[in-house]
Length: 116
Image (cartoon, rainbow, N blue to C red):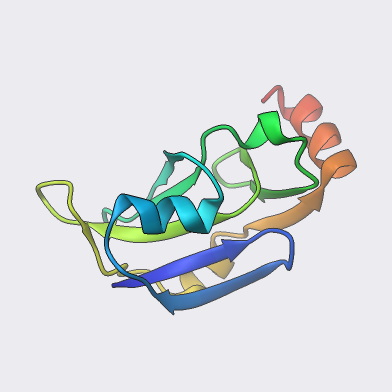
């Protein structure tokens, strides 16, 4: 299945092929998954639901959505029944969404200024 990996530590966005399944998604976010962002085309970004409890050093900030997430994310598509399918997004779509990679200090400043 085609997916987009958001690697906060290495500050990269990449298109990858993954196997379907909960264990695979959890592996890419290093923990229990939580749906964090829903895109208009039906794609979903999952993150580690306990990311903030793990003393994170690396964050992703989505200024257009006014959302901040600790650690990595994985984006997959979703069909009408809620099943994971190939993402329809491209790396350019994610870059155009203006995802920013920030450290702990920057994340704290941004979070406080936005009240998130």
